[in-house]
Length: 239
Image 1 (cartoon, rainbow, N blue to C red):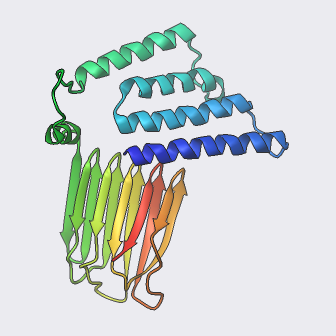
Image 2: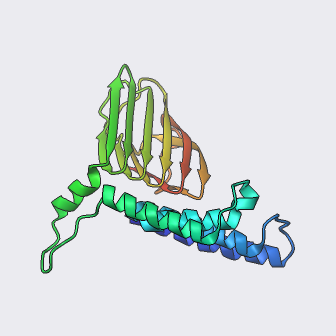
Image 3: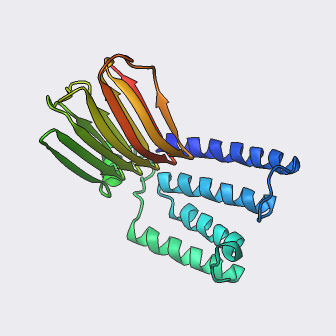
């Protein structure tokens, strides 16, 4: 999660710099000002970072600032500055009461098991497997899926606000090809595939990345990788 927020902060500042350069060159004719665009980028980056850290103050502050900046552009009702501040404060207090963070006593050492338990109590995992089809969905946590099917035809893997690792290195295709659908947002999805596979990926990317450690065998069985990734990363590792 920290890696995801770091990636988006970096992309946010790079995008802001590019926007400034293009606007100075009069190559962008935007309906909003340069500073409004910069505020929007920073709000989005702060929102992603705050979600990753489960910081309710950061989440509602970024949304409140975006409301004040883009209310007219987005057709939202206009609200006074202090009203937005009060709304943000009340929401932050309310959510912190409902979903408190654990606090350490003075001198108390970190308990990695306690931290993991506190984080994963919001986690949701669903799995389905059979008749050449495998599916795994993960949100708000970390999990690993091992696929050992001998007749793999289709797969679907979804991840949001967490990390999902899928090991396909022990899977065997039912035919000469297999189709894998992926959906990843605000997190990281890692696919471990056999080095003999030829992965042909057509994944739509928005403020994210798809990283292949190396190329597979161009003459090997084909794995069609389709889907989307936003505010996160999909990594393909050949093993």
